Image (cartoon, rainbow, N blue to C red; front, side, top):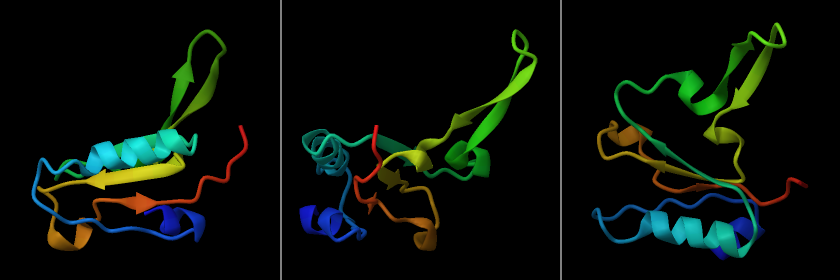
Length: 99
């Protein structure tokens, strides 16, 4: 997985539940100081659940964008309830955004 991060690649890990795929992804994100997010693929998942949404702030009278998990540096897509084509348990993006 570390090679995939260094090469700006992706990793697909498929295995039975309870192996520690989420723990592994979180540990890698912490060790290289990257943001981590998880998406649970369910049949009722909406595009705004992934990309984010603009919410109206009544105090400022303006819209504020609340970023979704796709804006994280390491993204874990998890879903045993998703169709086989939509499953990609671990999708990595290189840690390159400056904070």
